[in-house]
Image (cartoon, rainbow, N blue to C red; front, side, top):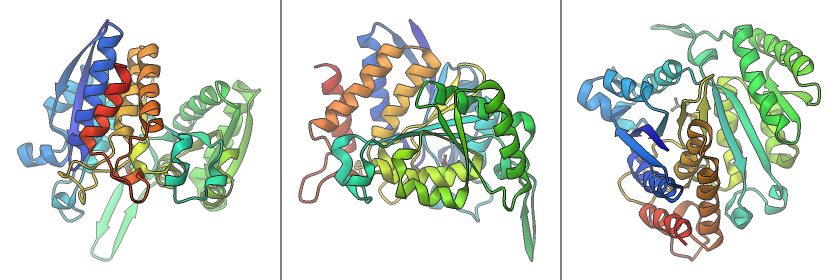
Length: 353
Ligand code: IPM
Ligand code: MG
């Protein structure tokens, strides 16, 4: 079969990790007799430098015409908070234009990376959870205002927005351990009270086999570290999910190993590692490409439906790590880390073994 993907390297380490992911993606596709056509486009700060727009029309068109979008990361000090045109609104617009309201962030620890985590190894045994983060609503997209002495960001959620992400969480949990923890701040926020009500109604009515638990976001931040293996599916609004997934990444050793899939109602999705552009290490060839390689596996699975290829790519990553492949972020003290490219080579070697 043949598929077409848009490839957006973005900024900082984005292009470096995307290059390795792309090598693995094309290799695994070929292994299963598939062909992937890539349309590489500028996005984020890199697009601002050329077009003065983080999401130029040609980039958006390439994404809209593709079966899936593979993205690295965007942002950097050159286009910081004071810049007239910034990369981040481009990412939010892309998510909106693609209609990808459900951001799935699976957090699973490779057993051999237990000691690479900053959290005590015995707490991590058996951690296997996934976030269903609402991605196209909430405070990220509300009205904003600024005067010399004040600023406002409005948070709005509609029933429809909450219903559809709750259904995503329900379907995920159905195929897993049938437990959903819905995160909110209903002791303070009106949007959270609506969130709790709607989540409750949808799960009760449509997923009777699922246990639904509600948890306040501050408590969730604590319990994620204290008893992470108790979580199965975490259902969150946009900003709570943003914050908690960075925290939860520490359960999996490093931000560098975690993929994400952003999905809407159709098959087309946006796939990106959950880490940022890491300007401090950009251009040095030391970033961990695993999160982006695993994002390509999610693309194979959710957008292309090439499940066997997806499983093979995930297995190749797991085998590379089992055989000792480590970039700087997950290397044991005293050992020499692999470069970004060498980590890509290690995964490719497992694929062709
Ligand atoms: C993420 C990122 C983005 C977000 C930024 C870059 C806008 O932190 O994908 O988690 O907040 O959604
Ligand atoms: Mg984030």
